Length: 373
Image (cartoon, rainbow, N blue to C red; front, side, top):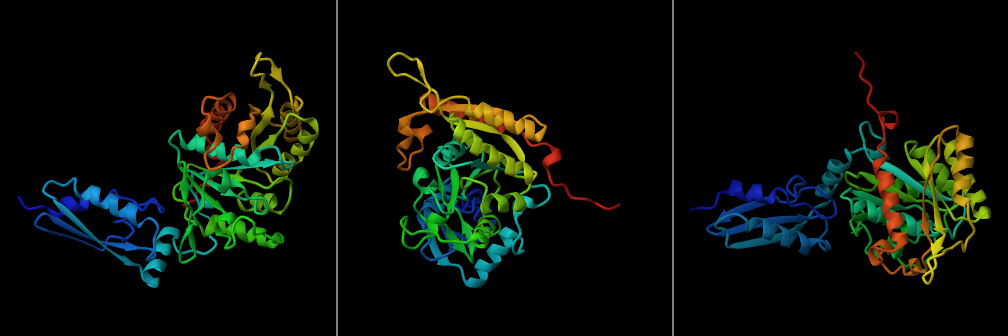
């Protein structure tokens, strides 16, 4: 019985580009599919000739085609897109507008959560990365934007080394541990030791590149690792993404907590919603007797939550506390919750992730289109 070409097309239809996360057929990347005897011939059109995802896409197409009865061989020929074809692809993905932030468009349901702190050294980046992995493990589509341009560390924590693929200037973030990751560290030609010496306006350009010139796909959550303090990036995010929510990270130490209050207060000034406070490096049980040890003081998280509640006039909760664990410093590409999944700190982070994703955004926080009648 001859193979039906429509059956082959139907089998190939679900195969997605691993970077763009949309079906290859829908993107026009399978310009030619033919059948002769038991052989299926496919032309795969790559965004660039040396596409790192070529092997993965070839294997996926082959496996899909062989699900059709009678297919004995799959021959895949690859070709690179022309400049015009890449421009068409970018237009298809972005709608063709420049400096258009898809997250700000009517009906967009991505929750943008900016993780902030008053000062460095409170474990904000590690916590942000682990929260992203924990949320993704629950089946959500998650992006992680490293907005700490000067002190970027997310790629090291997540184990991401490959730069984003570019299609006519449109960035495709690589994915690791189920999370799409973007950082300036991935785009530096001289490696991790190269400093970023940008003045304020350049930081805003980085933000716009990450938001308007990046294909994140359909995200449920976008977590943003902010730099510590109340500087240019925090201001730009508040102005550019007014629907973003803020989580303030502090340690139990009162001196650190007082500085963290200022980060939350800036969010209030920018009319951002304060989702809550996380106390990191909190009390931990003694491995011998189980008695709690308060190595970094106590009460900082509660103080920040209470102070911000009083300043805002609305409840700013203490979302939870993550016990200190010295093994968090093992940042070599495997996030803590994957390396030590049953540790008290990992369990606390997973519970925090649940707290975050069950807090659904209401219509009051959603940009809706207005229709004149």
